[in-house]
Length: 152
Image (cartoon, rainbow, N blue to C red; front, side):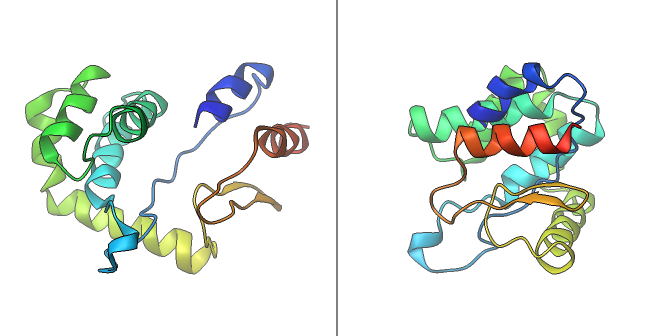
C-alpha cells in the first residue's frame, strides 16, 4: 500500500475503487493467519459511510507489520478505525452486522470467482491487470508501469 500511496500523486487522473477481499478466506491451516474477514467488514463499513479507505488500510498495515498487533483483535481494529476518524461504536457494530458479513462474502465471490484473483493485492483496470506474487506482492516499478498504462 505504501507504493500506491506514493505513486498516486503522479497519476492525478487515476480513480481508485477499492474491492476489499480476504487473502485467505478462513482456511484453518496456521500458515494462513491472520484472518482478515473482520478487516474486510470494517473496510466495507468505512467505504459505505464515506470514510477514507486508503487511510484505514494503511493504518491496519501499520498495526500489523510495524506495531506487531493482532489484526484479528476487534479492539485493535476499532483503534485503527478511530485513528482515521471513524466512530468506534458504529465501527464495532458493523464488524458483527450481517449486512457487512454478506458484503464481505460477496466481495470474495467477486474477486475469486468472477475476476479470478489468486493473490492480493491485484490491480485491474479494464483489460489491464497486475497480479501479485503470493507472499511477495508487487514491486513499486511494476505498480508504476501498471498505473502508466491504465491512466492513458
